[in-house]
Every structure is written in structure tokens, then in C-alpha cells.
Length: 413
Image (cartoon, rainbow, N blue to C red; front, side):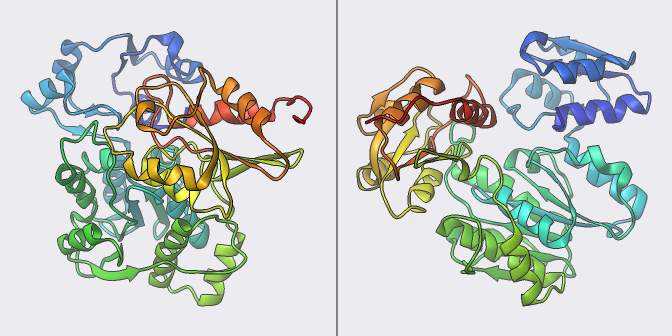
């Protein structure tokens, strides 16, 4: 509803340009609020249920949704025709430079395999700045509210960075580099190369905040001309973020706060008052002594490992789904030590998990977990894989939350 495709289409439509919005999904599978918004503009043409090469040929500019692969025949056709390709963040950054000059607005960009959403939100909270990008809100939605000398914090996925040609970020942050999206990238080098684009255009007066403990990040840091600030995990008592991995996210945000001149006292207060984001080790409900936790954004084995290590006792784990061509060996070995019951959502990756209870729907997963539970148990959704093409991780989280918030039956004996 507020994502990149909708925001970019509306941005150009409001300026009177002819806009073609094309999606391989049919109208009934798309967000109806989005369709209604776009239909208000007579200069917007909807081409749904298919893509057409004629639209590629007609286009002066192609705005790619981050999820569209370069392997798409339509993207390959666009490259063949040398069509300019960008995304909503690229448009936003270009507009800032046009309106305010190269450094008239301070932009902090955050990338990494894990932790970038939490780190982005925490930095935004520390600096009281506008937040957008891969975190779920296109920055084009607030472009007209930006003033000179403002600070903007953007979460940048590898897919967004792929189409940013010279971001020239005031502060670039890299949380970590772990294996992910191997169903999309042919190898880690290509994945890392897209992540390294966060440093493009940085000058010696800019800043780069990078993970001191990650060997790949240390290698990536050689690509920037900016001043380097190394971070490690930071332990602060009384925070609401669970898990050791979040101590690294706090460490990254802390270094950014230091770049902006915040005191230790200000930083501690900001960290303590920050509430965890939805879908990331988010406590949904405590019901009859059972704690339900939504960690649906754990779409890699490393993310689920981090989640399991966040608890001091065994949990009831809802996991499983479809492969991203990542090895599940380490997670499979860890599960018996940290999981008392394993419930597997349907998918082609489940043969790589230890034997568990297979279910067909999220509703069945929640009911099964409930029936197996006892007071004091933690019921954790942390899949370790994706559920695409059935649904993305956010929709998966919505399904889990909906089922957990329904009236559950009387506690099992």
C-alpha cells in the first residue's frame, strides 16, 4: 500500500506523466486500496496479469520493483534497449540532490543481511528522523515534507542498491554479510557486489559504520573513501530487544549516534525507549502462561539460529517452507538442543529439517502448537526459509498474528 511501486507510480502520475503500471498478478490478487488509488488518475494505465515488451519499448524510464530479477526476460529486454532503470529510492535521492544540493539533506543508509530493519528503525528513533526504504515505506511518500538540513534514514536491500548508480550517502552502515538469496544470486560475490554499492559516491568527509567482527564486511569496507567507524556488540541493561544479534544492531546504531554528536546518556535513553519492530522476535500475546512470538522475517537459517539462541530454554518452533538454496545443516544440528517440539509449515525445504509435525496451514500450525504446549512455554514462529510464492514473510506474519489473537480453546491438560 505504501511501498515502492505504488509510491513511484503516484509520484509521476501527480506530475502529469503517462504512467504504465504493470504486474504479472491479476487485479484480484493485488491490494485493492492500491488499485483504487491508481485508478483516480486518467494518465495511469494498468496492465495487469502480464508484462508486454511494447511497454518496455515505449518507456522513457523503467522503475523496477526490488523483487524483479535481472533474469526476467523483460528486464533483459530493457537492458538490451539500454533503457534507464531505477527504483523509488533512486528517484528520491536524485530529487534531494536536485532540490537541496549534494549534501543539503543528510541521508543515512543501512544494508546487511540481517538486522538492517531494526538498526534502521533504532537510528531513526535516536535521531528523530524520517525513516523509509526497504523497511516498508517508500521515501517518495514523504519527499514533499523534506526541508534543507533534515536527516533521512533509509533501509537498503541488495535489490534496491542494485539500481542506485551514485547514492553518495552521508553515512553508510553495513550490519553484516551472511549467505542469503542464493536462489537469486549465482554466488556470494555477486550478492556482496550489490551490497557494496552502498559506498558508491562517498567522499572523505562522509562516514561508513561497519561491523568489526564480520570478515566479509571488513573486506567490503575497503571500497569506501569515507571515514570508517567500526562497531561491535554493545550490552546495555534494560533494553526491550531480545538476543545477542540485537546487541550488534545496537552497536551499529550507537556508532551512528556518535557520528551525529549524541552523548552516551542520550544514546542509552534512546536504546532503552526503543520498542522492537513488528515481525522480529515480536511478542504477540501471553495466553494461559504461553508466550507467542512472531519472528516471520527469519527467512534464513542464520536468522532462526539467532532467534533460538535468544532464549534460555527450549521452545515450540514453527518453521519450514520453501528453499532459498541455503544450507540448513547448522540449523538442523541446533534444533534438538533448543526445540522441544518442531512444527513444519508446507514447503520443499522441509526434508532438510529434523523430523517434525507437518501441517498444511498457519491456522493448523498455531492450533497444534497450542495443543502441545504447557504453561511457561514459548511458541515461536521463526521459519528459517521463505513461503514464497505462496506469500511473503509479512503476510505470513499477519496470518500467524491473526490465528494467535483468535480465541484459543481451553488450555490442554
